[in-house]
Image (cartoon, rainbow, N blue to C red; front, top):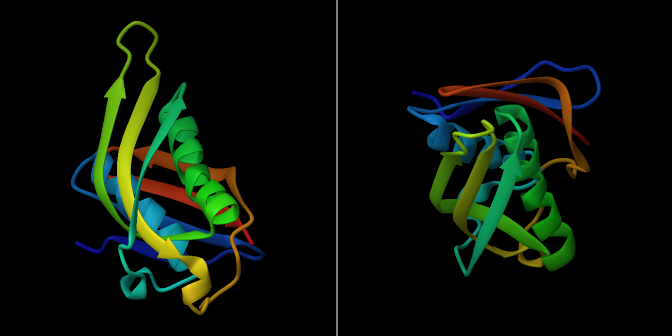
Length: 139
């Protein structure tokens, strides 16, 4: 099974990520977004970070999760290489979601970018199911 694919879009970058479950789908979505900027296979796992995200629904959760990588890139100059652990839980009372993850990456200054910089996540054309997530990112 392929992890993700890039889809045609007129101005930004659109991708669709796949997984056996929701956690794998979200992991592959993060990798797809970061691979817009840098080949994550070449980034070393020099630094581990824990991240959290919350959302009232799966779209909001994906948006907030992906935004964490842009925040780390902008505030700590960190490129993602891998997601070591990722867990998504549901609040049964209100249907909201929480995500915790441990990720690894390295100083972005050590790597040559291979594509445009992702500036923001968008809700435009976003779709999330257990085994597929589609998003458009602003470049």
